[in-house]
Structures are given as structure tokens and as C-alpha cells.
Image (cartoon, rainbow, N blue to C red; front, side, top):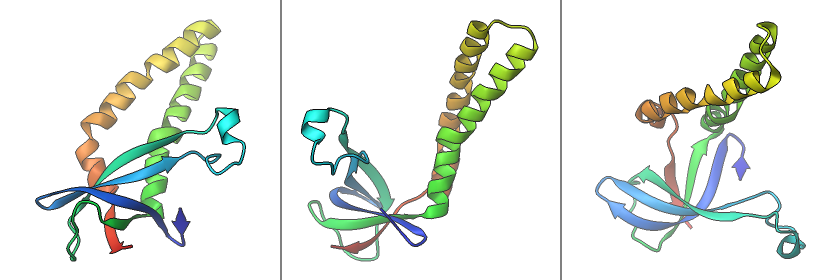
Length: 140
């Protein structure tokens, strides 16, 4: 949930590992609160583990905490994970069509181009992780 310029989630401390804390948060789809979710089959819910630096106050496994990130960090993550790949796909399809490739070849080339893109993101995960970070703000 977003509040002002922060994205906040309530989570449960899973483990404290030296200077870091693993927090489990419930990730829900937008329709998870719908009254018809049990019959629809479209809702999804998953537990995600987020690693955050150890806060100034004491936490132990089982504590309920609030974990947050800035809205700008969230936008940065969305741009890297969704916007740039879509732009890459469209650019390759358009370029392929201009070059005279068949639609199938253009589409296949655009999907194959995502492999090195996401591999580069994987290689840069530490650098990206420094820019996108979560922190534990309070105990609930």
C-alpha cells in the first residue's frame, strides 16, 4: 500500500541474520479482496521474503513489523522490470518490420532479446539493490 511518498507493507520477521532481517510479506493481487475470488480463480496470493537492514530497535522472529520503500524506488523497479522490456519489444518488432522481416521473425527476435536484457539486470542486481532498498520502520 502506498502512503504519501512511501510504499508500506506489514510483514512478519522470519529471521535475523547479523546485520540483516528477513521479513515475510503477503503479496496479493488486486482482486484478492473480492467477494467472488473463491469461485473466480483469478486471485493470487503469495508470501515474499524481503531482506532489510537491521533497524535501530530490537526485532526477533515472529515480530510483526512495517517495512517500507520510497515511491521513487518503486517507480524505478517498475521501469526496469516492465517499461524498458516493453519498449525493447516494440522497438525490435518495428525495426524488424521496417527491415522486411516477417511478423513471426520480428516477434521471436523481440522475445529472444529479453534474454540478454534480464541477464544484464541479473548481473547488475547488487548495484540495483543499493538503489532499491527496504527498511523496517516500526513494530506493529
